[in-house]
Image (cartoon, rainbow, N blue to C red; front, side, top):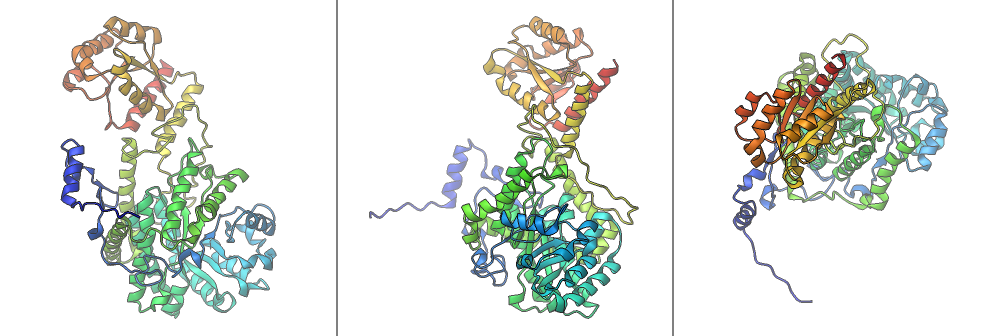
Length: 604
């Protein structure tokens, strides 16, 4: 075989060539800041990666909790079931279709059925966040004739319940946790009973650094409080499981899981825990925060990407949410697709035959390290303020998360962040899931809870408002005044259509407009309340302002928008246009204004 050689290229040469192709722009213009205040670079090299552990199951555990990764310890397919019939029958059916863990919602009805659990099912691990049913559910499990065979986790996180509901039951919660752990040490020795649940923070809009810092702070809180009852640090660490939601930012979420293990290694090392016992056990779930009611089948793709990130990040349990999860009622079809997503990753993509496949990537390793550093800094800040419970009672962490959520909402409002099928690439004829509100706090909160929701909700409210208007006979249309030939206006006509679609509004194109009279005739014939001028900057400069002035004079009640950001904006504004529609426009506010105008028109 002939030897091949390539000339060495320095980073300086690469930057020069790149900037040439960018027509003079600096390479720094490609850098981007994340919500975590981490600056992403266009290129990562070996010097971006600090020296890290070479093997999994060794400190700092970024490469995984097990030395052979999934080769020796496959992640468990832990699809959360809703038990509405026979408990055993539903579990056997799920297992026959690929489920490898006993995972289901706990409620009063399920509690009454637990004693029916057959011994054969105990070959599979539990994967349950029992929440307020934790104490009672564990008692039921302990009463089973073969309870000693049980393994997995049946956990509770009283801190997460405080964050989600705003009710302080911390002392009572830890008392029950202690009793549960103490009683189960001999009867359920292989069951982990302490959960660190970061899902409420994720669903409130928290970014990865906040989730990590909160997770570690909560872990420390659990250890400190339960140690007061006389339980050893070694016992407590062996009973903890961490639960994370996996969001849309693929590499950030992957690195988040790796960073979590590094941080937990740092904490447990400080407690004097032996290295072989410092590996973090992670249960992951795809994000509810990222899912949408409109174009719901896109949720399958979102869940697939999130599941992929989770698996590459190294997890022990995984729940993939059904695409219709926001509706609150899964179907046999949606459950099957969600479960099969995991099975494809495991059996067709062969990810179960990997050991930390992301390890060694300069980008991933650099991102992992930055997350660790920033999360540790926030963890120390929380600790200085008295710990996670205190910052929740003070409302400090709620305020910090609310700031991030506001930034996220601003990004989707201006469409700097895309939600496919919701604020970009909208299917106007597409159906939506039913609008099921997340049940709010049904009691008086003692502290401000973290609002739970989904990022797409604001745009969905626009669509619901539009549907109501349509039922009342309102024509959800905006006239597009297309100036000149197709090549002159197509770019901005397409942009206008995409801009209007998130509110369910259709753009109605005029024929080619070459004279002011053509435009006036189109407005007169169509009679819409809103119109957009779509043309080139040259056309705007030559007769755009004159055209706008004529339209406003002839039809003073018409709201006229200009697509693009032409020069002489003050002159346009003096004419009385409603605004400019361009890449940096606040799409949400503009559409909300248009719908409000249409609603007023019902009474006119």
